[in-house]
Image (cartoon, rainbow, N blue to C red):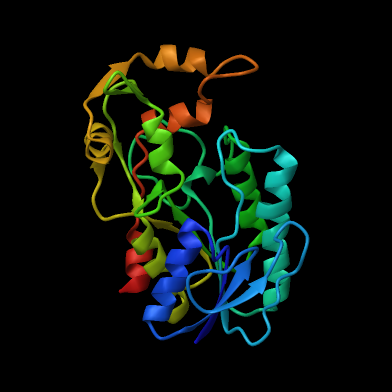
Amino acid sequence: MRVGVTGVSGFCGAAVARAADMRGWAVVGLGRRPGPVGEHRRWDAAREEPDLREVDAVVHLAAVVGDPGPADEVFRAVNVDGTARVMAAAGGRPVVHVSSASVYAPGPYAGPVREDHPTGGQRSAYGRSKAAAERAAAGAVILRPRAVYGPGDPHLLPRLRRSVRFGRAWLPGPDVPLSLTSVDLLASACLDAIAGAWPPGPYNIADPATYRRDQAVRDALGVPVRHVPVAAFRALASGPNPLVTRYAVDQLTDGMVLDTAKARNATA
């Protein structure tokens, strides 16, 4: 198997490249910088079609992330138009597109979220761009992880650290259940989807355990958690220069637990 991995120098892309190499697959990494293993082909996702010559399948992870992040047009150029370029270059070969649970309509949620939950009303440019990217990836296997974590995580843990003041993590509202996705689990799912020829469509990807928010934060940061009324956090998320975004508040209060039965059944 010769697999192309876009975004190969990123947190998730590097994990997929290493996992593919461990399986004995040849890796063709596409991105601005080389990945940890394999051949490198330089690719600017915002402007160019990727070079997928002699590649059997593609795992597409290249994306702009961030909250609030850059302007909407930057998200679109990479996340949406870049995905369309990958699909065109793939020419019908298998593509696994790594999306995000951020595509789902905001909660709170009455129960586990399945793949048929509405995907609209996102409160971040990132979420809107990932939903549009899924439409551009029609015909691909689409994976929807939530809050990917692991060694070298450049996003989730740094955001959580910003909640720490005076030796405490200050979080909005009461404790809630939630899903998290380890980067190694996501990498395995990407490769399993290719090896197992999963049918096209969306799949939730998350750890088997349902976590409690407060305990996960205590474990990650090593500090106690204190609760702040949600209304106070939402006030901070209002105005032209908010101290926190509505999306960030949602992530900590909506209690999103992903139903992963579809991916488990595909792997079985």
